[in-house]
Image 1: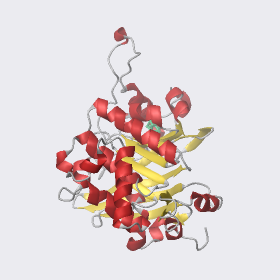
Image 2 (image 1 turned 45 degrees about the horizontal axis):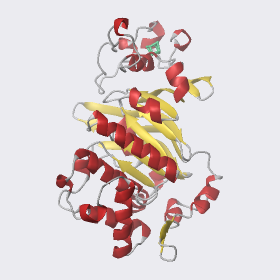
Image 3 (image 1 turned 120 degrees about the vertical axis):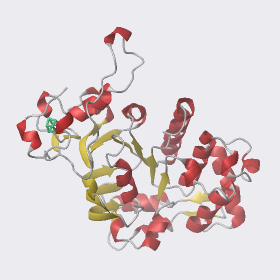
Image 4 (image 1 turned 135 degrees about the vertical axis):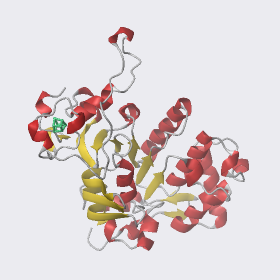
Length: 361
Ligand code: SF4
């Protein structure tokens, strides 16, 4: 990338008065794309929280990447570190008590950890959009919907108030809000949960980001609305060519949408594979356990109950030695309690961190 930083490319996305459209000048960014391997590449990321109860290694040496236009699922039980990984990528880990202590977060070849907070503000909401789980707490309750969409457009794309307002209407229409010109004057509490999440999607996509991070974006919604929002996110990111990092505890959710899946446990990536391979040929006992817990409509009634992973996610201040999953693992051998396996390539694009992976499945 040389001296071409993120800010140069953000400035390439501007509102064109001549065409009346958002000119993202993706050709410029795509040509720069040849100088780095992945749109986002996280290397050996470590994020810790220093608490009265000890040091929590929430993210402990995570490597992952996302390519242009790709959808990647990051999956694991609550407390496995996936949300902290997402917050680390956009530098929103509360400090103190949290701190990124090691690693690199290369976005378009630029290490986000080296940017100033001012530069990071341009990246967030500009080239990286974020959607959190609960839109009611993400949206400002005392500002109208219009204001909350218009401000990032003015800030990141340099639009005038009038241009931004007209673009905001288009965005609301794009995410399926009926009568957008009237609804723009509403406040968040006047909308349903599904509508609020649609607004969050509109805001996150407003500046035509290259990467969208959706952190449990549908968990707070009922299943029907959840399906609608997932379809909407997938359709819009495909149409706009935006890469999507989908963070969820539910392997069933990512099965339909992700190109690749990373499975996380106790702060580490334990398995990564293209979706079809992961669902068809899981090689880590934890992945197997998560898959067994997903209800299937095609399962025979007499085939019995859903399986569950025994035990609980370990206390993050006193993680078991060796492989942190060993107290819950049916495949554990003596070595598992002593030494943590690194991720080993077991197939094309398929990595597993398990001493016994050959016997799993
Ligand atoms: Fe289970 Fe051992 Fe594999 Fe860990 S390394 S998942 S304990 S078999």
